[in-house]
View 1 (cartoon, one colour):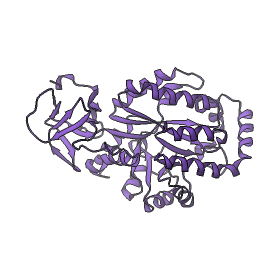
View 2: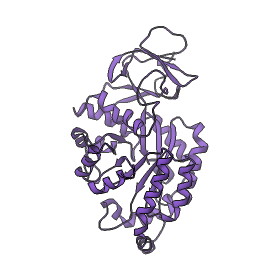
View 3: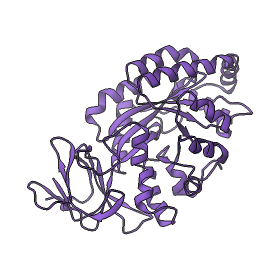
View 4: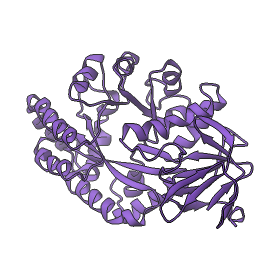
Length: 381
């Protein structure tokens, strides 16, 4: 298949260039050459971009439990999430599956079932779908099983999360009533569980270190979540945890980038013009050089919208803005075969009508050489 007549992001520049796709191999073929046989996709007026690589996506939880206590089958939720993802340009998707000390939506049974379903449904997904295990660090009884998942390379990324409620924790972990409702517990029972786990706080650093060592031995990237200080970021860096997700202060983000770490912030933050909980602004962090990756977080349409919003607002030209949702996350995840339109790379491409930069329209998504979303069928001959 030939993508013909579009403005393609090649070598860091948007240029009018045709792109050939070897559908059988699922790879990008010749770039810029004329001729060829087979199908042709008329990309005139469209921007041709590498597919979005989303390394932190937990919007599937809304398909799984759209209201507290109202659950749907995991396969239904994951397949619907896949449709939403590819229709918003996401061709590589890391589901942020939380395994917490809480029961319910983020409990052990659900985490096991989620991983099993991701693996079994993988041939049916449009996006290349993997597991970003969001491991709650006070979930000490799960350490041995998580270590086994890492050793078997069932996990694509391992994130260290601490949402234990307390006065010295991030504000969103203080919503005890909301957390108790999600866990299916009364407030009293939830607080009793919290106090029992806090009594084991001295065991947490050792558990983190052991799991980090196993992940590193299996070349599984590590992330720390909600780092609250430069000192905390340095502690995680010493464990070879090189991705800082949603650092809570500018000083922490600055420490991360100064040390060569990636900083992951939410694309919804850019789209909405700021954090929904009053934390640091992602666009401002990008302009300061303190953010390197944007992720969908809780909203699949956000990465596509965010990159074009950065360009429209003059924060970065589209060629640079797009790297925050494609090339940079691919590199951080250790995926060397995507994130750029290059011959031999995996054929993950999206075609966008960018006539309105604030409302870019996705026309087609191609993943592994297959069209997985198509809005204007008349362009394909």
